Amino acid sequence: MLIRIRRGWEIPDREVTPEALVFNRRALLQAGGAAGIALSGLALPSHGQAQTAATPEFPTPARNPRYQPERGLTAEREATTYNNFYEFGTDKGIYRAAQKLPLRPWTVKVDGLVDTPREFSVDELIRSMPMEERAYRLRCVEAWSMVVPWTGFPLSALLAQVGVKSGAKYVRFETAAMPAVMPGLRQSWYPWPYIEGCTVAEAGNDLSFVVLGAYGKPLLPQNGAPIRFHQPWKYGFKAGKSLVRISLVAERPKTFWEAIQAQEYGFWGNINPEVPHPRWSQASERILGTGERVPTKLFNGYGEFVSDLYTGLQSERLWA
Ligand SMILES: Nc1nc2c(c(=O)[nH]1)N[C@H]1C(S)=C(S)[C@@H](COP(=O)(O)O)O[C@H]1N2
Ligand SMILES: [Mo]
Image 1 (cartoon, rainbow, N blue to C red):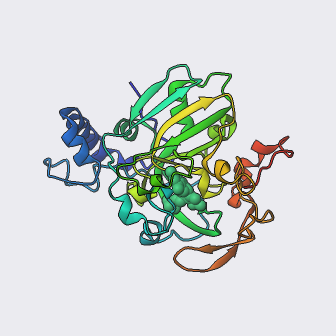
Image 2: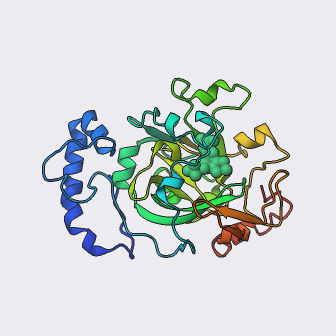
């Protein structure tokens, strides 16, 4: 039995109505797969009074005030129509093609050097993990950026469920490879599936966030539905979309972009305005939607939370 952990800053008056809804929702999920699909937010047939309150099918927890985005939220339209998701194609307009991604059933395997390897269904995670909203900056190495209100939970909460063994040094993220719906996989020179990774220490940082929703709704396919990752102090390419497996491993995983072009993309991918990428200066960034250009900050402005992770690692290639 997983315990729903309430955060101190969560607004208590949200609890009264949602309790009843959560109860109904569980009953519906137990009733079978059809209800599960309906509750994913794609289709909303009426299931009685449980559906009348605001978005009972997906939790809308309070925003964590600790992480201030310091800029306005990016318009949802921008964030959902200008994407990188090479499995669906290399242009920014893959949102149409991505609608073919089947979102249920969907499970994520958590395995490797853990005490209890397990496979979690996405709906189980939505019900049982300590969900919160976080408005994070996202900075792509192509020098554009946005601010998205994600819904999800800290990766550390999931790792606590399985228990990380002492030999584990890295986390390897594997994302979906579904040739039937992903035309990009025909580009066979790319090393599919898209793999990403970080250290166990980075994974344990509270900013490391497993994302299930955005803008108060379940994640859309183009943003990596039904479950993706995000570490806001790293370039966007570190954030694997449509995760199927999270493995605790002893060796540093070979990541997708590193495998393609090791001179341009390293393992760490930390944001640093002073270290240019061969094709893009990282000194400034274009804000999606407004087109405004602003200086880029070290660690994307999250240094106070993460710089300690890198003491003693100066010999590593810490910046993309
Ligand atoms: N599986 C997968 N994940 C991926 C990518 C991808 O091509 N495939 N692109 C990455 C890059 S380069 C960026 S900038 C972000 C973009 O996330 P967004 O489209 O939700 O803004 O997703 C990352 N995750
Ligand atoms: Mo990116």
